[in-house]
Image 1: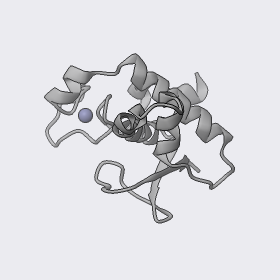
Image 2: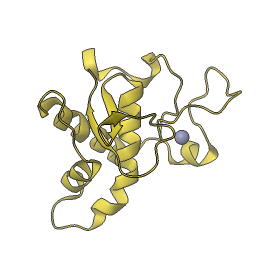
Image 3: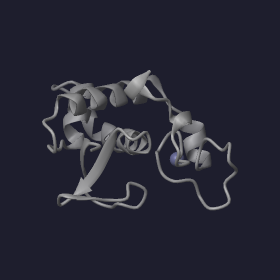
Image 4: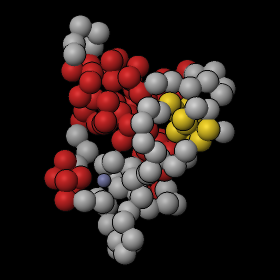
Length: 127
Ligand SMILES: [Zn+2]
């Protein structure tokens, strides 16, 4: 499906929920990095967040970045404070899109490793 590649097709082995690299020694068919991710799995809400992120990335000018909070607010609805709870799921969706070759995560304009980056991030289309 073109850019809608499934996580199974990516080359780097990352968790299907949080998008972080698998821990050393993880088997080749492992899907979740941790018991926590395995329990949470991927919900319909996660898929909505990822779809919103993809749509916004598609509309971005080349090289422009977006803040995960824009996506979280859009999914939560403007009158809701729920968006704060959607920030981590939005960052997780961003990591999955990096693994899928769709996005890059940046800090201060530099591409960073999504598995280890701490603090505020921005997301842009992969080049
Ligand atoms: Zn995980």
